[in-house]
Amino acid sequence: MPAPEPRIISEIRPGLFKIRLVRNGPWVAAAIQHDPACGWYALIDGVRQSEPTKEPEKAAEVERIWLFGRFIDQNEYRRLTRAERAIDPRAPVSLATAKPIF
Image 1: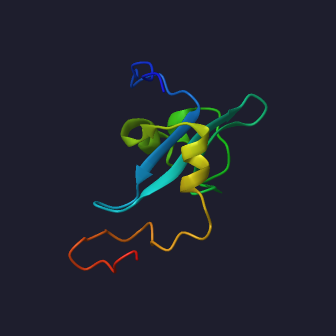
Image 2: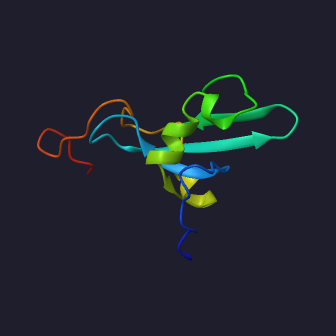
């Protein structure tokens, strides 16, 4: 996968990302969406975070995703939005106390 273009902090653009909802938490799929008819909004784990707004800075979670998210491709986005995920995305992950995966 080619390296993403450098991010210009003041120029929010639509895209697919992964973010952590809590420190040391698992990665969760996130997206910044822009519809010219209705405006900007964010999706986190497949759930829209607020009603669309005309300015991206005013849409809930858009700035957070843009500033702290990591760009991902469509395949990774789909993998991170799986409903059968066994890990709570709002709880930190500790390898010392985690159950073995097999």
